[in-house]
Image 1: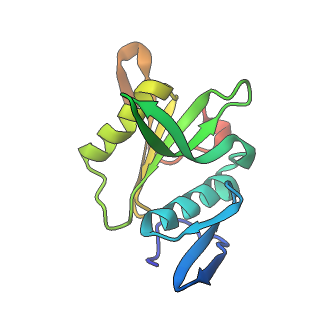
Image 2: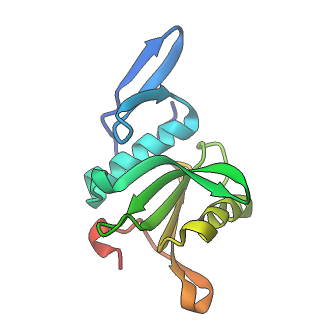
Length: 151
């Protein structure tokens, strides 16, 4: 897999029937390794190992029902009090540009979840914003915030 703009992480893989699987430490199981999954695993390790995010508050592949269709948020960080979504994350393969369509996708998920932050990453570029619901806007952040910096 391609090198990413993220710190190295200890990621376990295994081969079964000619297919590579990666251990998802949040779901506690092996999943098929795709370029997007490679980004997800590195990004979630980065959040936990370098930004202080508690792994017990993170979840991967969170199902939601949006306009009658089942969708999956790539990752969600929940708060400690009642499980309200704080951050919704969307990952793309490193070859996929972070376009307006990608932001439209995560914003559609967030129209239901109403998280405080949105993170988008293709492993090479990371874009984070804080939602400003009172102003019907958002503010881009300079970097991925540490868990302790989340307002």
